[in-house]
Length: 210
Image 1: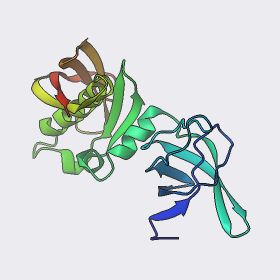
Image 2: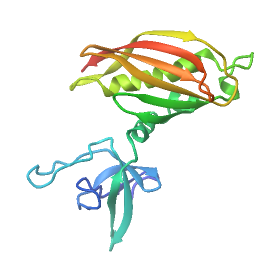
Image 3: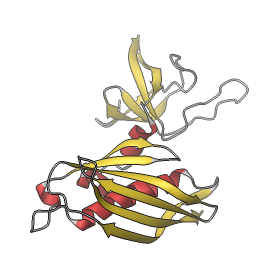
C-alpha cells in the first residue's frame, strides 16, 4: 500500500461484478469509490475495457490471502457525480456548486446562498451567479465537443439580472441553443428556491483543438 490517498488495487474493468488480477493505481475517493487512473494494455481479443480512465467505480472489497481485490458493483451513480469529482478543489468547490443533472441536453446545478457570497447589501453577489451559470454552460459545452477536441473556452457571456436573493438555494439550468463543430451557445436560467427567475445568462463557447 502506498500513501493514505492512493493504493495499488485490482480495478475490474470488465462487466459489473467481475474481478481481474492486474493491478493499476486507483485514487481512493471514499466509501469504496475509486477513480480509474490508468488502463493497462490488455489484449483486445481477450479483455474488453468498459470503464475508461477518469471513470469512478463503486467497488466491494474482498481479501484473498495476501491480495486485495475490488469487485465492481457499478460505475458511480450518474454523470453528474463524475463531473462533481472533476471539479474537486476548484472554484466550483469553493462556491459550493452541486451538480444535480448532467447530460448533453441539459445541465443543472445548485448553490446555497451563504454569507461569504453576499454583497454588503446582503444579496447574492452577481459574480457568484455568473460563475454558477458559466459553470453549467461550460460543462454542457464540454460534453458536446467533437471527437479529438481538447476542450472549450468562453468567447462571450451576457447576463440579465431580474431579481435578488439573500437566502436559500439558487438553481441554474443550462440548455443548448446551438451546438456546432467550432462553437456552441448555451442559455442558462438561474432561479431561487421558489422558482422565481433571478438571472438569465447566454454564453458562447469556442471549441479548442489539441
